[in-house]
Amino acid sequence: MSTPTVLDREEYIEQAYLFRTVRERVADNQPAQEVFQRVADELLSTTRLPYAVQFVASELKHTGLLANGFAKLPHYFTAFQAFVIQQAEDEKSRLPMPTAFLILEREAAYRANQPTRPGLFVYQFETIARNRLGYIDGLEAMASDPFYDADWRGYFDQLRRLVGEKDFSDLVYTHSELFVIEERRRNPAFEPRRPVIFGEKEGKIAKASRTRDPLYLFAALQRQLGYPEVPRYRIRDDATTKMEILQTKLRDLEMRLKLVEGELRGSVDLSQFGKPDLLREKDD
Image 1: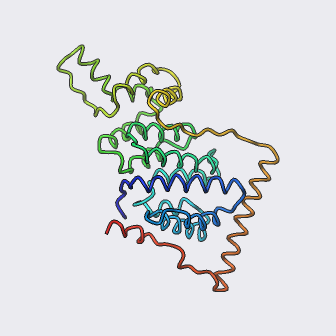
Image 2: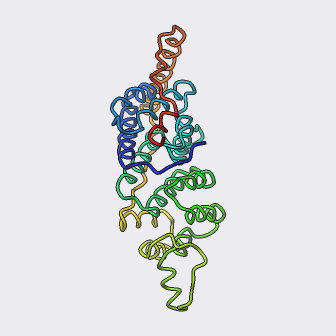
Image 3: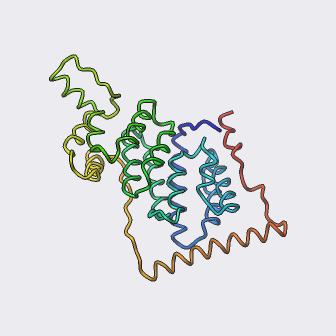
């Protein structure tokens, strides 16, 4: 399996454009398969994203699932990106696909503009918490992101054991510079047993948020430190919405049937679909 790597800034800029474009066009009832096929031509050709999109489109055609394509390109898409799409495709999940694309769009935009590890962590963790995506699998996906170092991966292991049992604000505060500063005021020889991965400001906000709903902590970090805001959605359960969903599914089904029929007649050019190996050209 390929080793995940942190991408260049231009890749994340194009990713943000991709996720926004797909979200908007699918909302206009365009079939996802058709959108992914066409959008590849719009992306910056000096990036590796067009090849990735072609591969995802191919996987979508053959399996009907977007997450498969993301998961099979671990050297380009992160495990967290694949996890979010997988959750949106799960019928038992409460995460709508448009919201999933908006989550990925904002994350990619943040990565393109001087991201910090605490900022990315808070965004991803709130995404999991707010949408009830599952802490165990979610934190495992986060831990495989090459943006995080060994100290952060150790922190994720701790969270998997303690989340839900210990105040989340404490789990931030006790790993912050503020905690060390305050302990050394009482004991100048104090040395932290845990890695210090949050700054003094994060520690101050976390300490002030103790015993409160973690969503208040996330909101305060966004206001005070400019962390990206996790998208929220309102559940619509009216007849019009249900009809729109059915129409979108029918369009996707029609597109897949046309592609299958074309392939059987030998009129589908499979050379348009990329392979994972193409994404390694820049690495070789």
